[in-house]
Length: 296
Length: 270
Image (cartoon, rainbow over all chains, first blue to last red; front, side, top):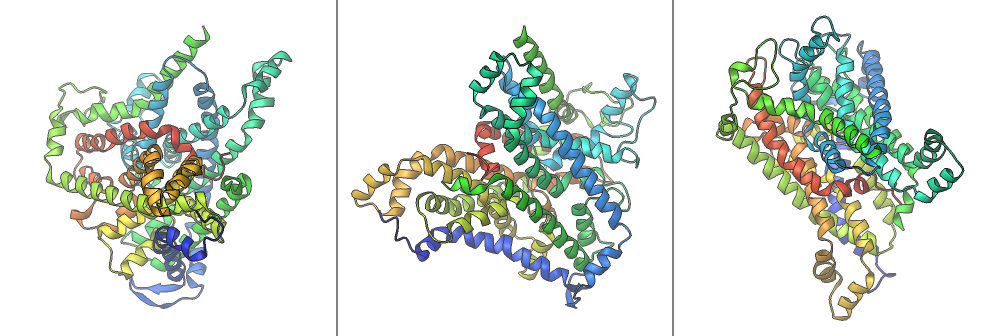
């Protein structure tokens, strides 16, 4: 087998199908997005000429933009933050041996494997003001005095969406942290036990520092996933007019495809900003994981 | 007993995670008349498993199901065909541009089609491919490619070169060595890739919502939302259809759960 002399052409042959796919469905739409952000369109979506930076200027003038950016920041921070904390506990639990552990792992798979849009619809039903089981349970237990219009009340809709966001982010995060825990050699703990360190101390001064790489990976990937998340906000916020609880992703989608607005150029400008935000997170990821090691 | 306490905690946890889906199951088994009652009941009074037969006999549901199957299967085939040679070559050979290629793959994995959906729509609109299977299949394939390359590359790298070298002595070419020797050994990785790609495409929502506006071309994720709109509220049928879509993929997912983290956190493991 020739290993050294493999030429660029040969490599191109083997990588060709993958490269073609990435070029056609990732690179091309990025180009289309950038070009659309610099163009003017009719309401039916036909190109009407160039707009220069006009769409970006108009985007900054949108009254809804500050709210949308703030909502996005709350959405990402709250979902990722709480998910990480709960997942740390779940991973710790699943790292122990006990009867029924398999059952917990299988249960944890369900929100991961199920279609997000179906889970989102399920929560619309659970949160329902009149017929939802949540209000019934909370009122019966005396936790709330009267039913709450979870998805219709400006005060509760964000929390209701964040809860679902956390629910569907737990499985992946727990699995990543569990893999991190399992990579910690047992001898480290033996030594600490000999030294008489207590459980909580062992966790703080041994487990958490050694779990740092897994925590970083879980955090950065979750930031990207949650920022990109569409079905939950799209579905749970469906009834509310305006953009009071939209993220930068659902706001972009509404501008582009909701019949009343249909402003392709404006949506594309926001799309470019979204891509840049994700790119920033990707750079953080690449710098934290030193991905080159995986090449060995 | 510490183990008993852990088991108890685990059981409670499993129940908490599954409880929303229990609501889904019980609602799916309710007759229409029991959906809008106050106070709401968790369990049906009259159990109606016939909802499943009704949904499975709904021609619209069968259309969505067919579209989902076509899109998920076709995009999975494309993922395997495109990812296998790339994964093999990058696992076995060093060549100029190898790092750049792997970086490119890693970056595509981070970009869900959601962020690019306006660009994707512009592209397929310009190419007159809106409402075509091709557009949806290729988009799914492209965004599931990275996971497949990571999983396969790691597996290929773990297969000793000597096995292929023996095949080379027997006069096998590189491609034949891959197909005849390496691939049969790689069945577990291949199964992981196939199941993951299938489920990811099966569950994909935003691109399908945007591109597939023709009712005869909607996949399940988009189609089933028409069971509950401003005008009709067939929650039981919505959840019956959801369960038909969810249960098989949960079972498939359980088969590959151990291998998922490696493919999803590529570049960070080791």
